[in-house]
Length: 293
Image (cartoon, rainbow, N blue to C red; front, top):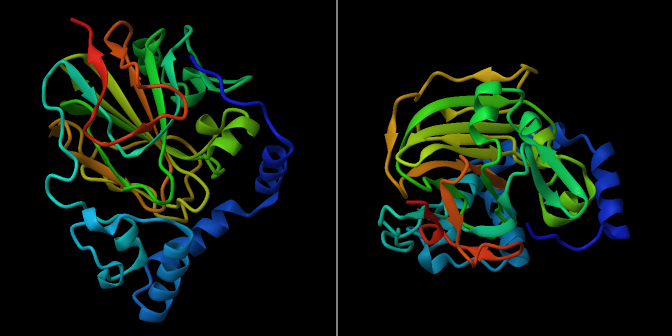
C-alpha cells in the first residue's frame, strides 16, 4: 500500500469546518437547486461551475452544457458512444469510473488504508455484515475519487449478477484527499450503498460512498436509493434489482454531485496493474487489475 502526504494545517481546518457544517441540510438544498428547471437557476449554476472547472464537453453525447434540462442532468451527462472503450478480455478487471486513485492494495485481515496514519476496517465499511466481511477478509481493495470535473456515471468493473444491495446511512463529509487525510474512517462513516455481485472471479463489491453535497445515489437496478431527506438511521437491505445480470462496462449507477467508489475483491482473485497507485488517474473501461488464473 502507498502512503500519501502528512496531514497539513489546511487539512485540519477544512475537516474542523465540516464537523460543524449542517451537511445534510446543505445537501438537501443542493439537491433541490441541481434539479431546478428554472433557466435562470440552472444557467447561473452552470456558469459558476464551468468557470471553476475545465470540462471536456466534446466527449459528451450532448456537447452544449446549456441544452440540459437541469444542472443535475448536465452533471450526470452521458458520453458519446465509443468515448470509453471497454477492455472486454476476461483476464482484465476494468476501472468502473473516471477518477483518481485514493488508495489501492491488499487488506491486512480486515484493515485497509485510507491515508497515511489512517485505516478503517471491513467491519466498519460493511456495517457489520459478517457474511460479506468473511468474503473479503485479506482480499484486495481500491478506492477511487471522482472530482467535480469527472464523468459521474459508474459502470461495472467485471460482469456479474447482483447479489446484495445495502444502503447504510451516515454522515456527509467531503471525500477529497484533504478530508481523507484528516477525518478518521471517512469512507466508513459516510452514507453509502453497498452493491455486491456474484462473478466468475468470486464476489465483488462496488461501494458508492456519498459525500458533502451528494444527497442522492442512483443505480440502474435499485433506482434512486437515497433521495434526501432520509429518515431511516439503520442499514437497509434493498431487494429490488437482486438477480439482475450486468455486463462488464455496463452502467451501474451515477453520483448526483460526485463522490467515491470503493472496490472489494476476495483474496487471491486479482493482481493490481502497476499503474494503480495513490494519486494515479484512471479512466472508465481501462484495465486496472489482472485476474489470477
